[in-house]
Image (spheres, rainbow over the protein chains, first blue to last red):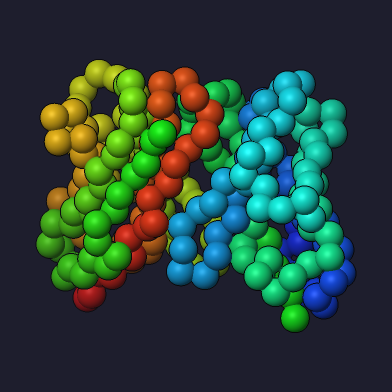
Length: 113
Length: 113
């Protein structure tokens, strides 16, 4: 079946602009996660959605970052007034429920110039 | 708090030789342990997991991992490495049924022909 998809695959933006990154999870997966992977570093947890519960936003690095999940499916990560340090690969993952393995999308490579 | 350590940034082996990627963890309670692999410019792929039961877990592509509670380790192994196994490997842990995975920094595996 279809895996997790993300769009765009690459995004180049100027410093100060807003960007939106999209994630389509695997159908039926109730949990959705966003991570950030900076060059040469591991994965940094950003935000977690589970069903209709309030999301865990504890990993968002600043108030410029926000995310929403509509209808329990598609999620959008928005970064306002982008900075050069926001340059990274943003990974989305979904899972059938808590404590289960996560399935990752291919990522969006964001470059802020 | 939970954490994962991958003590080796890089592992180099010759094709056909055994491959081991080390992982130690720290978590209160029973751990759920995972291994993921990331090929260049791709998202993470799930390899295997340990939740309970047999300490030796078998996964995709001929990989296996051994859970050792006394040493708090979950090392990834493959008896005979292939050049195509060259990739970045991540170990991850969460506590019981918690949703937030903690990832190690990753180990780059290079298998030479």
